[in-house]
Image 1 (cartoon, rainbow, N blue to C red):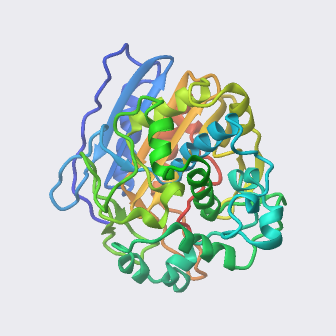
Image 2: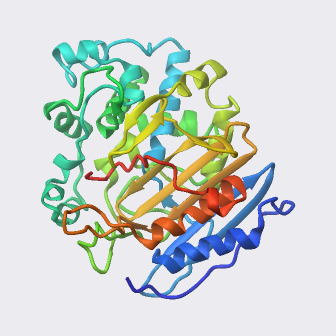
Image 3: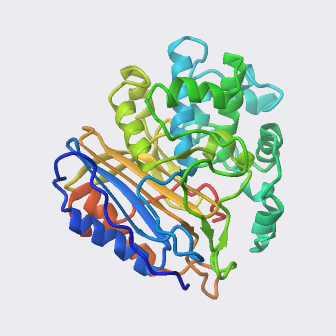
Length: 399
C-alpha cells in the first residue's frame, strides 16, 4: 500500500520526562508507519510522567500529519464504559448481576434463554448469544465489502440488531466457558440500562461515567461525522479494498453501546486510571469487573475477560487491564497496569491489513511485527516484550 510520507514530532506533555526513552517510543511509532499504517499516535504514562507522540499522516491524499491529540473511534473500548454504568446501577440495587435478563427484557430475550442468561453473563460474554455483525453486514460472509457501503448512513435500531443475534443459532449454552465474545451482549446491556434508569443509555453513560471521569473529548457521536480534529480511517478488509477506503464518516448505530464511542488517547488513559482507582465504581464493583473467565474472541483466540475488562499478563512486566477496539478503519488499544503507574493508549488509522492466503487465512504482515515495539516500549520499556496481547476482541472480525 502506498502512503504519503510524513512524521509528526513527539509532543511531550508538561511533565518531567518519562522513564521510557522518548526517542525509542517515537522510533517505535515510526516503525509502525513504515510498515504500512498511514498514521499512528499514542499517549504513554509512567509514574505520573506523560509522553505523547505520532507518526505518519491523517489523510493519505493531502499528507496532513496525524497528531497525538486527535479523536478516534475507539470501538469496543466502549464496553468498559457500558459495564461501569451497569455496575453503578448494581451498587444502587436496581440491577442484580445474577438476575435473568428475561426479568428485565423479556421481549428481547424471550422464553427459556431469557430465564437462563443473567446480567453477569452478558457482561463477561458467557451468555451464548452469537454476534450479530455478520447478519448486519451480510456481504462479509461472502468476503465482499458491499455491506460496508450499503450501511454507511443506515440507522439501525438496537432491537433490530439484538434480534439478529438472538435469532441466530446459539454460540454456546448460557454460562458455559469458554465464553464467546459477542456485541449482542452489550447492546442488550444498553437496553437494560435505559430500562432501569429511564434515560437513554448514551445519556446515562455520558453523565455518570464520562463526566465523572473528567473526560473532555469523549462522547457518543450524534451523526455520521466526528466532531473535532480527527484522522481519516482506512479500511483494507483483508485486501478487498485496495487502496483502503476511508470510513471516518459512518453512522455508528450499528454498534451503539458496544463500540460507538469517540475519544482521545489522553482521555482513555485518564478513564482507565480513574476506573482502576475506584473513582468510577466502588472497590467491590471493580473486584467484580476483574473476575475473569476464558472467552473466545472473534479472531478465534482466547482472552481473559471480566465484566467489560480484558486482563493481560506480561511475564516480567505485570498485569494490565483495559480493552482494545476496532471499527471500520480505526483500531485502538488501551491498557493500564494494575498498580495504575503505567498506561498506554495507541491508535492506528488502518484496519484488516492482512491479506488472505490461498486457503483464506489472513497472512502475517509487517505491521503485526511493527506494533510489538510501541506496545513493548510503552508497557515494559522493552520492544521485545510487546507482543500484541493475545485475543484482540476485534468486534468487526469475521473470523
